[in-house]
Amino acid sequence: MDIKDFLKEFNRRCGFDFSDYSTNSISRRLSKICEEMGLSFEQILNMVVADKQLVQTIVEDITVNTTELFRDPSVWTAYAQLLPKHLPKQTMSTIWHIGCSKGLEVYSNLIIINELGLQDRCRVFGTDINPTVLENAQKGVYPYSFNKGYVDNFNTVMHSLNLNTPFEKYFSIDEQADTMTVSPTLRQQARFLPQDLVKDRAPFAYRVDVVFLRNVMIYFNEQLQNRVLSNVLEKMHDGALFIMGKQEDIPQAMKSRLLRQGPFYKKFK
Amino acid sequence: MATSQYKAIVIGGSAGSYAVVSKIVAALPPDFPLPVIICMHRLKHVRAGFVEALNDKSQLNVIEPYDKQPVERGNVYVAPANYHLFVEYDATLSLSIEEPHLFCRPAIDHTLSSAAKTWRDKLIGIILTGANKDGAQGLKDIADRGGYTIVQDPATADVPTMPRAALRLLQPSATLPPQGIIDFLKSIR
Ligand SMILES: C[S@@+](CC[C@H](N)C(=O)[O-])C[C@H]1O[C@@H](n2cnc3c(N)ncnc32)[C@H](O)[C@@H]1O
Image (cartoon, rainbow over all chains, first blue to last red; front, side, top):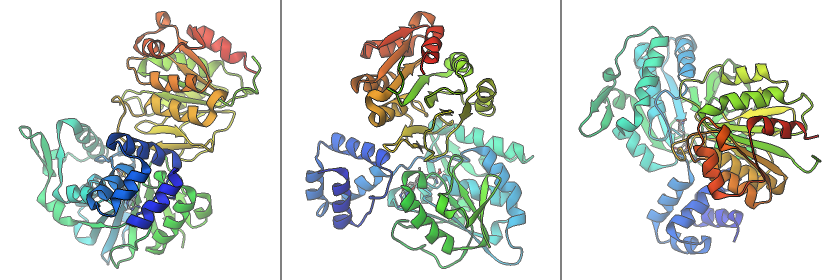
């Protein structure tokens, strides 16, 4: 049985459609799963109907969920400089992080929003296919010594915005337990909800002013990118900001609908 | 060397390989017939200006590729900082932020192994000086599929760990000093 057949059958039995993910990445991750579990594609398919935990594990292992606080600091600086001008003055704005993983990108954004004093004007959603990472996002607890780079990124961004804000304003560090925990204020400002971008609509009713879709579509083929992007575009206000990963580009077919503006895109009116 | 035989060159090295890499990209002629893909470990702080500096030295177009960018001659692709760089079956490049491999992101093994799957015996793989064994398995994958493999002579390497690790895993087509690698590449028509 080849990967294509496996993914098709996995979708039929479990309702997760990975058939339009990039072949290279998915085949590497699937062979790793088979190897580690000592199971063939056929054996996995025989087990998934009864074993929901196994389905969950496979979804988690297929999708890449690494993330970082203020990944690519210069992008965040540019974002912070643009945001006050971009958001409408009179109404509440909606910001959506798609594929938010463990929430660090959402918290990066909320830190900027609080530093700019915009917290009462924004609602911020983070969505992901994987309930386990969302639980982690909600709790806001992360390993500390392994992630000291977060503090460097934080300081780089604050410094470039001429702010002296200490890391401890937003995170409490427990050296003994080797954890850092997001402040209760930030946690209350974030709303994390499950959504499978391939088949579900956005899990909220608002139109969106800013979309973060970083390092998610690099795992999709171009066909799926187009499909996903047109759904996301429908949810965005004209002129809304669209932010991808540093080395990502929108697919050719979508170039007439999103205009490049420095490191970002804007939905064409 | 007769050339139409090969489709691409992949090069791996760690932080100390910058000097060798910049000599290589400076030496390649503007009509060099093969695309070059370089995966280099970088020190966290040398980010800005790194690729621009290589591009200034080279007559080829040195770039950090975007996800899904096709591989074309005339270009030298350098794995972007903090991303793994893979070659897809349709000879486009793809990026991933998945876990570091042997503490490295980008990881040379990922670039070399995926390139080996795509180009098989039509690939030239080169391992340069470096302080990590990442890259050895990737070069072996190239050798196993009949590609041409070169290891920088450990005696000429600033840090010989990487070439030595490769030599432990495979017998390369050639073991060469930096100038030998450059002469070899320039002989490709
Ligand atoms: C590499 S992480 C990126 C996290 C964050 N955006 C960043 O750049 O740091 C990719 C995330 O996309 C999520 N994802 C993958 N496929 C998805 C889908 N079909 N629907 C929703 N989320 C998905 C994964 O679960 C993972 O958490």
